[in-house]
Structures are given as structure tokens and as C-alpha cells.
Image (cartoon, rainbow, N blue to C red; front, side, top):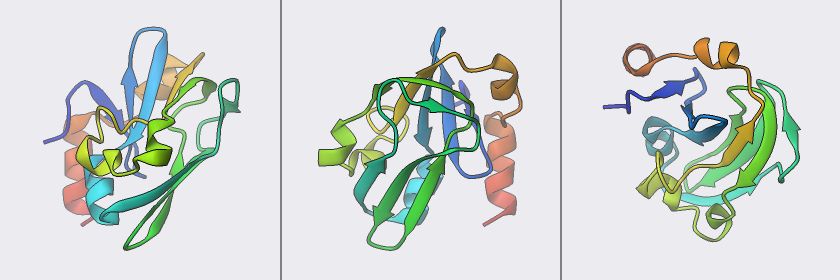
Length: 128
């Protein structure tokens, strides 16, 4: 149900290791809980340094607003500006076109502390 190559947080963010970079987004589960996403505020620009747990974005929908947190620390090297004009990408393709940031300099140890797909699926099932 959740891509096996990603790592997950309790706050429903995902992290993809792309070699020298990590890509951050929110899970399909989070997108479903929010409903139709209508607005995204990205709180970082290229060069911004986030620490693990920093608020990196706000996502608003017809149902609620939610903060997005950095699953690992690092320096932003790319921002998905498409989300500003097309926030629905988060609902349509949360693990692809709906990504938020790409960062470098993140600690592999921080990534290792996150849940794998099986653990995340169990977490979601136990906390619904």
C-alpha cells in the first residue's frame, strides 16, 4: 500500500533517498485525511537549512490545515513550485509530482530512524 523504497514519520511525511539528495513529501494517507488540497505554503527556499522536526510547509484543504515537518535536517536544493499553482498534485500523485522539497547534507542516521513501509502501514492501522 505504501511505497517500500520510502521512509515514513509519525506525522505522515515521507522521505526518499535519491543518492546525494533526499526528497520530502506527505503520504497518501495524509492527503486522504486532508481531503482536496486547496493551498500549499512552502516555508523554505533554495539554500534554507532545516533541522529535523522543523516546520517546512503548511497544507490547507476543504477540511483542515496541517503543518508539514522535516523528517531529516539538511539544506534545500530544490522546491516544488508547481504546488503553489497546482496544490491538487498532492492528492493526485503524493509520491511523485506532489513532492515538497529536495535537500542535501542530511544524515543517513536520521533517515534510518524513520519507519519503513511495513512499520508505517502498521502505525496507520493502529492510529486510525
